[in-house]
Amino acid sequence: MMIVFIYSEVKTVGLGEADQLAVLQGCPGIPGEAGPKGEPGLSGTKGEMRIKGSPGKAGPPGTKGNPKYI
Image 1 (tube, helix red, strand yellow):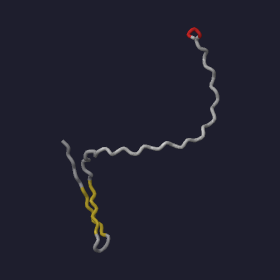
Image 2 (cartoon, one colour):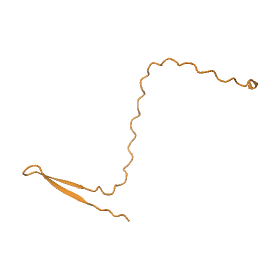
Image 3 (tube, rainbow, N blue to C red):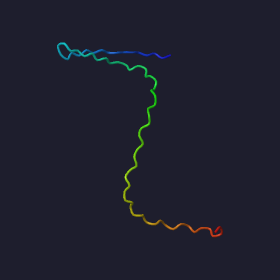
Image 4 (tube, helix red, strand yellow):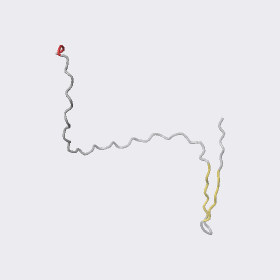
């Protein structure tokens, strides 16, 4: 069982002699169900190709392999 209290407040603001504005403020209530899923967006474009950098230093030598499987 769900109990929902709805409390709203009405404010009347005078803008001039003949103009009035009513502001209704209260609880938003229970949210409804989600709407349908939207269409997918456009795919992004490929970026601009730049100049490649210089190669880095060579790493340390690896360990010696096992010669019996050669």
